[in-house]
Structures are given as C-alpha cells and as structure tokens.
Length: 116
Length: 114
Figure 1 (cartoon, rainbow over the protein chains, first blue to last red):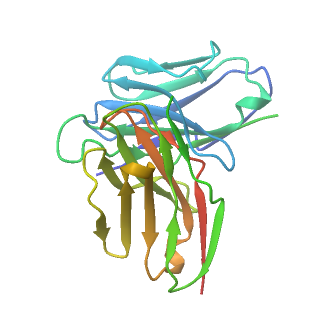
Figure 2 (cartoon, rainbow over the protein chains, first blue to last red; figure 1 turned 90 degrees about the horizontal axis):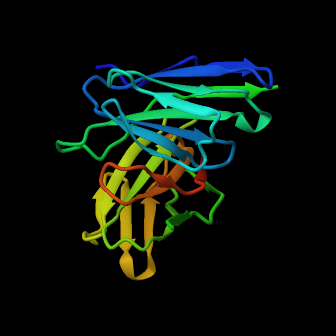
Figure 3 (spheres, rainbow over the protein chains, first blue to last red; figure 1 turned 180 degrees about the vertical axis):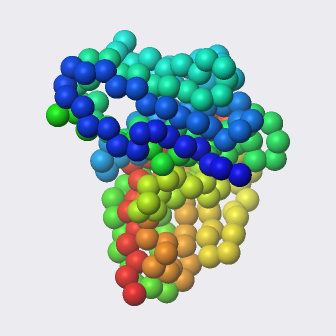
C-alpha cells in the first residue's frame, strides 16, 4: 500500500518561470488537498478536491495558481510567473470521506520550491 | 474566523521527562474537530488524533495523552516519559468538519536529548 507521492521533491526556478507539481494520492482516496508550508510555520490550506471537483480555494491562492484533478486521481498544481514569495514546501494530502478513518489526512513528502 | 494558537515555539527536555504541548483555538462553529499531527525531521506529517467538539473525554494512547477542555478552548497534548524518537514538530489543527480543510497552528518543536 503506497502512500501519497509528490513529484518533484525539489524544484529550483528563476523568478518569472512557471512550475508544475504533481501529487498522486492514495488509491481510492476521493479527497485531495494542497497546502503550503513556509519555514517555522504550520501548513496553510490552498485548495481541495472531491474526486475531480475543486470544492474550495483559499484566498491565498492568487490567480497565478491553478490546480487540477482531471480524472479524480492525480492532481497538479501550477504556479505561473513565480515570485520569490512563492518559495515554500507544497504539501499534498488525501483522505476518504467515508469509513472509520475518513477524517485522517495522509500527507505526502512535499515539493520544496525555491525561487531565485 | 478560525484560529489555532500554539504559544510554545520550542520545548527541550531530557529523555524520560514529560512534556506538555499547549493548543488554544478559536471558532464560532458549534461543531468542529481538533487534530494533532507530528512532523518528524523526515518532513511527512503524521496523524496522531482527532477529537470532535462533542466529545470532551480525555484520551490516552500509549505514552500520548490529550486533554480537551471546551471551557477554555484548549486541546493540550502530553508525551509521558519522552524518548529521542519523539523529537519532532507537533501541530494542532482545527476543522469545521470531519474531513475538511485543516487550519494549523504554528507548531511546537520538541527536542528530546538523551
């Protein structure tokens, strides 16, 4: 049983470039979440999906950010025209919405983005 | 608006000492859920416990125990007889529903030395 995987694990990019991250949730988990974590802080919610539907987006998610989950399985998070303030760890989590442990979000290892 | 406050930035203890992590929350919801997650040096967040707002029973799991007090909006976490492997950042989190988005506190770094 594999956990949540994220690729790439590290990304260094120059300001103004676009980047895309991928998250593969645990198989059959219908909920998928994206969070962002900066050094010394707790994760901040960005957005989440139930199956392929994006149900909520945080006000933190500017127009430069877009997330998709086209077939209700993996998800991508794209940041356009990156800024230095986008440097952070981007975390993906998945969960079920039914069953005994449906409340437990399983987190991936994260993608660390550095914008130079 | 919801808010989670973990006032302790870092706690250092010697192995076998007990350590208590404080968590204070704010919410206008009558139904809500509280969580604790552990983030070891490897980085992946690990779920520890969930508690709903209607269940104020304290819980013990091995060396871990949780004290939920609705009257003071607190959900504190105690590690008894700490071990080096307990060294990690611990986050308290709040959610309006059981499987919704999590609002995390800033975390408390626990350092356990031999």
